[in-house]
Image 1 (tube, helix red, strand yellow):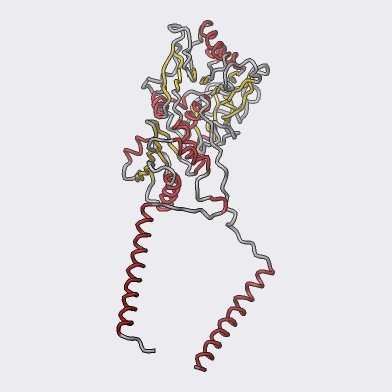
Image 2: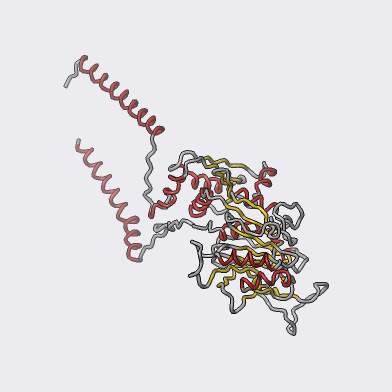
Length: 453
């Protein structure tokens, strides 16, 4: 069939028009892809997408979220952080991520208190949280804590030689109070002799290692405070029974005789045996997220009275190689069976809850913590191990700031392929014989058809 010149020109115009329209459509689709985003997660359990609790939380957060990641030149870790934050950015546009190499900015990393590679600093509403766990569960619950707008006042008792949250001495708590401030928790002090009452807006009363015994009137004020179902954190030191005996009697807790010594510290280059180590933690809201060991300089062992009105749950326990040394800690020391010394593990921290709460006027069940050491939160030792994380977790638990969002686990169901012997034979026969025969036959048929033309 002969095509005229006019028909040939018309066909060429059709081809040109088709090409222009095709390229224009591709360009339009490319522009639309920059204006609108559509994503679909086809993985098992939708493990590459946020869970509904996280999405619901993001819808409630109106202000911008700033995330700063301190990561070395580790491409895998940086990609992991970027992918985690990207999941949240899909549902909240005003989330910013800044990646800083701590090796290039050591002064800034030191000021932020960075201890591990890949640690995140998250800021929201003027508050700040540090995060070391790179998963949805940890990040979502961190955002929830930051979003908590309720004002918290942690009140430190003074007037008996306690640790001062405003003091700059090595044994004071100013650095810890600063960390609490970063989390939106305010600190103040109260002297019950000058002000014989505990303010109603007190979210937590802290008694940090009193050097002298409290007066009977002060004990009565604290007892009334506890009877109303209010929280308390009591920190004490070895051989302080006369100073805290009245407080301990209210709680049904006792101090063991002597100072906890730990022979394990020599393995870590610590010559002072009075530094107790805690390397394993129970599954408690205070300690379940802790990963590093915590260090307690000069700790006291704790016991529980049988008639205590509180149920005591151990949260801090030393290693088996520790014991309570009752003699002077000089030269070579060893455990003596013929004394009041007790072998490890020694419990140095209890979380207390009322056994019966029928008469409790508080809307939440009362929480109390007793720790046989105060130095671990001091300016000198706060940065050791998990001491800071433990202290912050204690305050948050006592303040009931632990309403964690339960993120369902998204396990990969399709990471393994199980092939039986029968299917192995089928696959082997197919790849070794069936497919080659099929390809050769197809080639022969095509060759014969072309030959007949």
